[in-house]
Image (tube, rainbow, N blue to C red):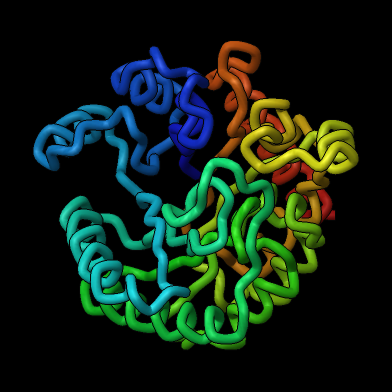
Length: 299
């Protein structure tokens, strides 16, 4: 178990927790007894300094988000060169997975979009083909450096629905492209998180455990608001605080013997929902599920 610093400092909503320091985040993670974190925007970019800060608290850098624009072949050469640098940084930090997400078509993340646009653009046939080819190449780069490319299906992007996830898995090389299974983004994208887990378990190499406040999501859907606005409205939270039943998900992972990293994520305003407090509650909730299942197994 690890935790994402996005619980303390927003990545997509920059005002969330913006005055929080790297030291506070890492101290809280250590106090929670968790041994892993992803890279956060408050963390030092200098590897030696970062290694020192993490090592002092016995915390491992598990991964780091990498946006890619591979659906447009004009960007491929540059994107793959950047991907190699990103992978080399993670390899040198002892990480084994790369959180990877295509931003082509995204309202918020695609550098080609203009401020007056209002909708995510879905990929056309050429876009899908270029994306799959590019991800396979990026995955081979990662594999050559001892890492796995884990694709993060993500709200507000061109790969968020169950059908889009299925298609991406079908079109990519299973030895080069793995899945980052995110419970919250699965539900946000219209998928059944448990069904998605079961269908693609053999491709899953990394997990984000995130919950969704169903009432807030329903209101946001009715009003047609975008992904970032959903974050501001508190659609997302930590496991046990929303509407996802994590019992069957935990049981499935335990039954199948999942032994990779699973990261707690909330992605909400820490001023209203203090990160350490909510993480503690999530850990108690998940532990209770495991203990109940163990008791049931003992008969």
